[in-house]
View (tube, rainbow, N blue to C red):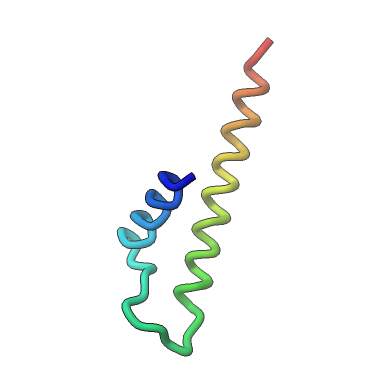
Amino acid sequence: MADDLQIFGELVRVLKLNEDTKTESRELFAERIQLFHRIIRAGLHTIREDLASKP
């Protein structure tokens, strides 16, 4: 799980969704949540496809 969090952190930095200092704006936080949702959705679709392809 630690590896997964590290990869998520890398994605956040690459997509420039990280914050050096906290602000009142919740825009970047919301975008990180959307990214997390995309990751979960992609994983769910992958697992479903893997299960469908098994006899």
